[in-house]
Image 1: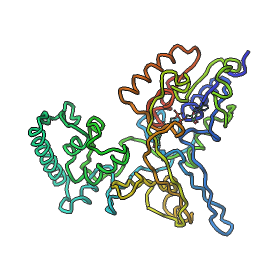
Image 2: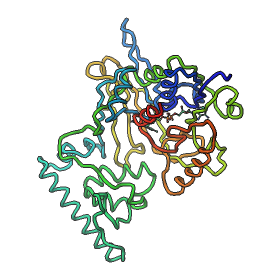
Image 3: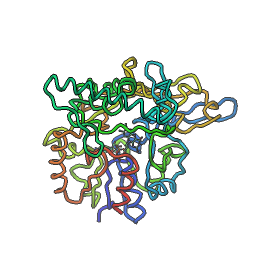
Image 4: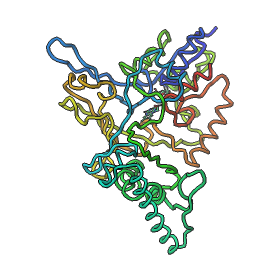
Length: 402
Ligand SMILES: Cc1cc2nc3c(=O)[nH]c(=O)nc-3n(C[C@H](O)[C@H](O)[C@H](O)COP(=O)(O)OP(=O)(O)OC[C@H]3O[C@@H](n4cnc5c(N)ncnc54)[C@H](O)[C@@H]3O)c2cc1C
């Protein structure tokens, strides 16, 4: 008899949620992670700051692998995570800074009134955007006619414009010149490391605009951050489960995992499992420069996007605003901020976003065929499926397995 029913490789939300339900069903699980801590990408580094004379300390949870905001429409998932840890009222309302001008995001009536001083009503905003879109379509069509390219026509289902030669043309014809130039162009170029003229049009099919005063980034019914941070959620999921950190599956278990477990749940990179035998899958990544600022409130918001080339980073995150509200912001005398840099991926870096282009999708498909032939191995999560998932869909997926 083997010791464990499941060896679970990776303690991110997929592995931890799987372990939770398996443990609840009476199964014996060992969860391993090659990182020094549990939690995968939702792990937060607790950073304590003394509050002064006998008042203890405040903890700022630093989102070490990128800012994570939980959001979902799925009541079952929301009730499940809240049964483990209560979530706070954090609502994601990012702000854009374009050369010192501040705009609310996502594009809504606040943005439009900040952008155009003569816009005060939805009707005026709609008219302004319609004029700029019309001008963009006219100009691009004139150029296309001159250079022998097909003219633009609205795509079916409102998904942008057919005939747009690149992302710049597509975006200009969706929202017009002002929003494109101040809030999309340079930000997108920093994200992709390329000119919008060299990026394919299909990346942007829709650019949602809201003609209401609503800065809530997500359209979901439920959103928030676990009170006490994501580590509380992970610890609750893994309560009573055997875990090992600093434990790399390939160094310690790959060849003999069947000796210690009946089944393997693998949430690491798909290509690595097969020794990169068919080639490496590409990723996009982000790097962070994190520092402590000697002020209680550095930027007044958790997320500020920097949408011009003046700053090399795309966003600045001020972590305390995810969990501290009102006076609590000022009770903690310091703050932690992270600049985010969109960076070309190299093999030693964190794998953040799959590159779902034709080449990589085809390679992933070949690996998936190999994966299907592996007996008693479940490949799950963003790395093993080579698929971007938000947190709630990961939990939903695991709940579906049980
Ligand atoms: C920058 C960024 C920001 C995000 N922001 C949001 C957000 O705001 N809201 C949202 O809903 N979702 C967000 N997500 C998505 C969210 O992070 C994922 O849905 C979630 O992390 C997926 O969990 P997972 O278990 O599949 O992967 P991970 O969390 O990556 O867990 C995989 C684990 O496997 C371990 N592992 C890999 N190989 C081995 C090995 N050989 N041996 C042992 N262990 C191994 C890794 O160390 C890691 O801990 C974001 C993702 C990124 C990249």
